[in-house]
Image 1 (tube, rainbow, N blue to C red):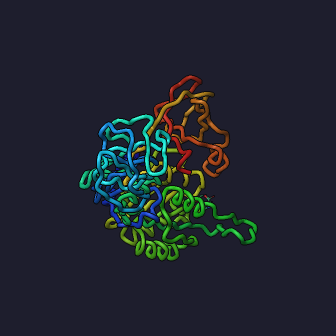
Image 2: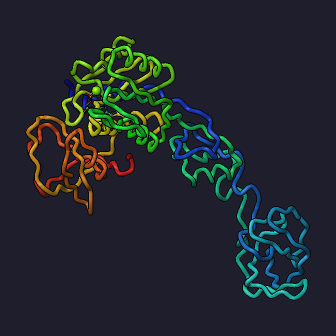
Image 3: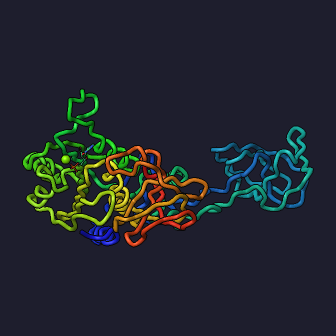
Length: 392
Ligand code: AMP
Ligand code: MG
């Protein structure tokens, strides 16, 4: 049995290298940029009018003759005298010989002549080439989250594909003779399978589409077969149940039989003591305890960092602190992960913490961490927690 911190450290030390793929920017949702991107063109690529008005060569003249018009998207580049102007609109290319745009609200127009009522500063309302960024400059750094704003920014450059870290290919295997899939009648003694659906959902929420979700009955053959199939197609395999010490818990045996190296088994924690972690080549395997709340807690504490790392994010948890409200005794000598509610800067425990119960999880937005050495918590104590509101 190992400590929570050691278990996380062991996982961290065994992380595979991140892989990356080139992805169409239209298909990226919160991908993380895997390489620096340099501007292939300047932005703006040409001198643009920032307003609707008249472009002219600044000379102090207030009365100008309008010799033509340039609309957004057009190319019209006449020579201009000091007493000439061009009608221009926002986004249009400013003629090379013009250096200033006066907004139409400051002009009186009489047929083909304008009189400027309020003379602008030289250079006003003209966006210079490369004013935002010059060709060849660093546009976005590796590690940048490609959110909608970044996608728009890349599209500004005409960039169609961007290199992002590839989310791991994850398989989920649910084990248990008692499990019934949704849509089927519950016979006496059976329960609905919640874990595989829950894991699929939390994976999806964290940017991972599962490559397979299967079920195994409690025989060594069936469990072994499902693990072998998953090893073929996955970077990460999550197994739920069958990892405890019962006569029909075959997962550990099957993993060892197929050549997965055991890196740890059992963590001094509640919930989720019978957590198992191993690897085969660069594939990671995590066997999660079957009790639903244990499964989810272990996923959040141990599996999510793996996924974050592979997706280009930070492995470590952002552990925050808040003022505890209530009272709690820890007589277990174990590391506890308690379902909690963080509200108005204070954190309190939810009732029904048992590892078989998901109700408190469904209401919680934080996991409160209690170390084995902390025997009790009382109101006003500053306690560490992981915010899970955005993970579930
Ligand atoms: P196990 O770890 O296989 O001994 O399972 C521990 C508890 O979790 C038992 O009560 C199982 O019925 C329950 N359990 C295991 N797998 C699932 C699952 N996929 N969905 C819901 N409950 C499960
Ligand atoms: Mg079982």
